[in-house]
Image 1 (cartoon, rainbow, N blue to C red):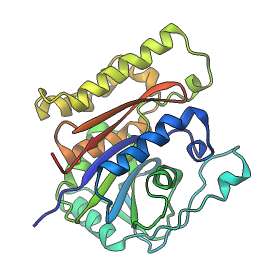
Image 2: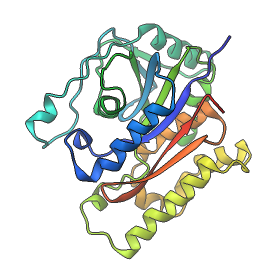
Image 3: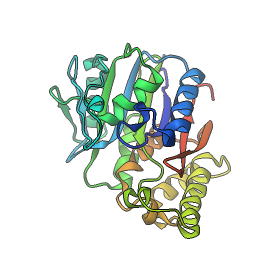
Length: 269
């Protein structure tokens, strides 16, 4: 019997800041801790991180990947963070085979470690680091349909109590994080979030309509203000490609004073 995964798109905040007690990440930390109580503890986790791009989808396949501290200018403690979870080579192989069987060229990478798109949120959700993990890259074309297709190819994942996490950010305009908010900037942030929330949660849309909205995300209100470059949105496309339905629960919050959101497709639905 095939076991479908829980699927979760998260807004993962700014680098290691959620682990450093930053005030602007309190809601995010609380939200992730809350979500971890809502779903069964996973037996393995796949993370699609906004911080890894390759020419073709690439999967970590090592037994015990190291951590990649892929952020700069933070306190020394940020580079001493540990998250000693194991890899899961058999799950990596399954992902690879599913992609290849759908005509999507893929790679296994035994040497690549886990970046902060994985270890920062997982240290919040599952601090014991006792769940094996696999990371899946984005494709550097940043083509939305390609990422929807990658997700669709993974619909037949068969792994009991699996959790798939798309680790990105529903708002990712780096310049805007460091500027004072104006009425205009707030309105743009709000407009895109409203569109995204409706896209992911409105059950009256057909899946053809929902996919078309995600495919054409750049035409949404203030899309390019909220995502000058879309790598932090595309993990959502992979999540939806697997789920193929409206989310079972959405979470609206402020991160670094920007309206942000997270989406859960629970196996209970």
